[in-house]
Length: 585
Image (cartoon, rainbow, N blue to C red; front, top):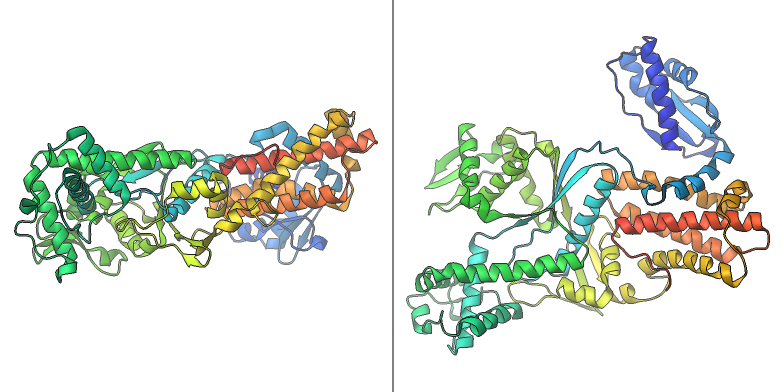
């Protein structure tokens, strides 16, 4: 109905342009809101207030002209002016039944729109370092990012999903060294594992596979590995200095073979991440390698562009980006004293690459602990000569998992974490995805395992899926009762749906496209979750209050058409969340 009213107003604006009442250059956004008070109609628009100044007319006078130019439509019984110039629309009660036939006609397409106008949007999400399996904290960003991308696509954007693979830099060197040390243990060498190395069982498994295939090919005496290294933290030293020294010894002793170890560790973990995300219902158009930026000279090109713009300077042997002049709290190092590029230098190059690919909107989804990183990246985009508003950063709080009263600690380095795969095995993909996007992404989240696995109405995903299954159950009962579903008869008698529950459900079904559009444009999937829970609740209440398979064929088929429309909308919403729609539970 909102779309119908928008079309009527657009027709009026076109007519007023032709008459010269308003400038032909004005292309206002038409916003239709549901009226808060039924006495003021069903829908309202503030367009006359928005256009009054450029049209050089009093808002109420302009509202009168807009109303006079509106085409007649049987769905609208009355239009009136309220307050300083709001235009209120009163809807014909009989038009509410049209939503059932509309849903049946559009099916899976009901709710989809073209509001995105095929604009190119890149959504980058998860992008966890390939130094270990994904844990439950990463899962929330994965679920949120994939649903945001799917919602944007549902309303007409051209969406490109991307994972940025941090396959260069110190953390990957720590992983390679960690795998080699575990390999040496498999060879029989005895050593004290570095406190700052990656200690998870997955590192042992990679090392064991290497040993099984290569035997002692990469073996070096542990005495050589530890030669001239400083003390580790356990011996009163600095753990960072120690692991850096181990990395250097690893590179020196392995020589050209170091790259083999590096690559084996990277590919093993990255393949695991890809499989894990695919099983979680998350897919990408591109896995973008940080190393490619290094190898093809993109980092140098990005810094050269900044230097040409006068945004770089030298100080204490390092190269700095003057980001404080562009809204950041302080300047940032891009090349260290030792000549190595910082992570931020790679990020600048990556965002330059995004801009050069011609995306209309760039969406980065990061963990909430990266909030301080936002101003410097926006400063870099501005320094590269682009509009910083092209970048939208969405922050996601990590989910906190509880087992009973005990909080489970998650650290990739120590290996003490619950993987996303383990969570999915315990609660299932559907519950995990539903719970992850049930709240605003920036809100703190405690993941309730007990609730997620319960088969009760208190479990929200079970409650919504059960509504879908219940409709399927009703349809299966048709044969048992000797009835058949006559869709055409039901459509002819939709006006028999006059019970309070039915009228409420018709209004809720009509709201679905609005909710979908709002959830997409505001990057808030939880709005869709809340809608589905409300629709499921209304249906369950209706189911408990009324019989659907009654003797009166006209009433029976009208109700069957209604509940099938409910089933369709539940399926459309759940499919967008990549959650199953069971036919029995």
